[in-house]
Image (cartoon, rainbow, N blue to C red; front, side, top):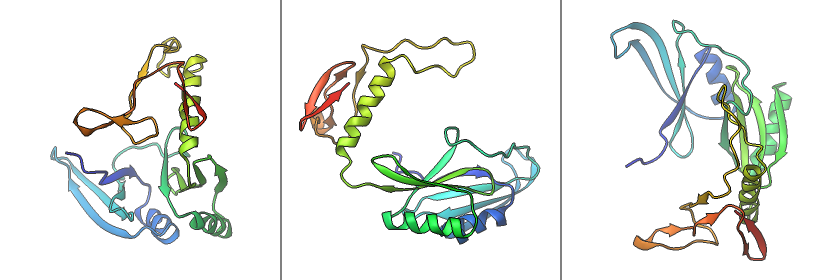
Length: 211
């Protein structure tokens, strides 16, 4: 039923300032704009809705809505960031371009399976440009191991006020429907990972895989 992501939409301070960053600097074509004068509830408004096209046909979109309160601030990466994939050679080129223009830029960060640099757009959002690193299968296995270790160590804490830290979920089972060396063909032709129980160790091409 769902075919993919059409667009993500965010608030912006100024549509033209936002366009200069996303089109002129990042190179995303300005694709469309909507002027909204009345909401679906009948309230009069004055909003500009702009769209910037990505190569896969999806869009980043923005609302300039002066009559609606919104707290614009420098977002932390962990709270909100937008990651856009680029070719590996484009990463270094954009890093140099950002520095040459005096923009706020961080990186290059090596995440093993991707390399990333970070900018901040005019609205305070962190924009990550990321390039895939070839042959990341073993890194994927290592990431699953780290995730399980994080749970077993009890370091995961709830963000809900007044809620106590959750106990490690030692008996949890994991099932993922993505192609992976542990997959087998399930009923109906689906690719299914056999249920992995917390603490179980398996070998994949000689690499320990810890659930």
